[in-house]
Image 1 (tube, rainbow, N blue to C red):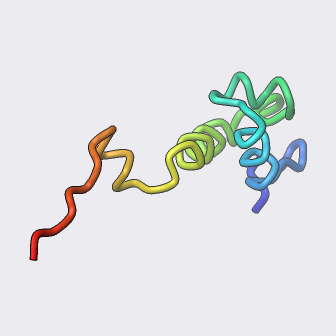
Image 2 (spheres, one colour; image 1 turned 135 degrees about the horizontal axis):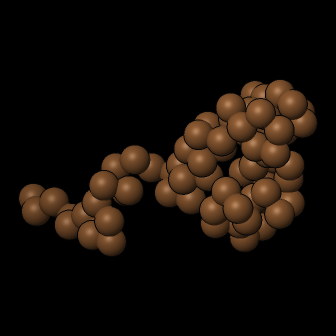
Length: 72
């Protein structure tokens, strides 16, 4: 989906930047011009970056805890 209409930046491009090492909107902006015009896409871009760094909301809430195996 298009995230930044002004520059034609997609969610895939933002995810690719994260895969290549970007960890913040500022770092993504070093590779892509997302948020560089009207700024309406900034919140969505940040959300994509955050979600792609931690793909499971359950894992994000759990922090570094790991699931214990169930006892039978």
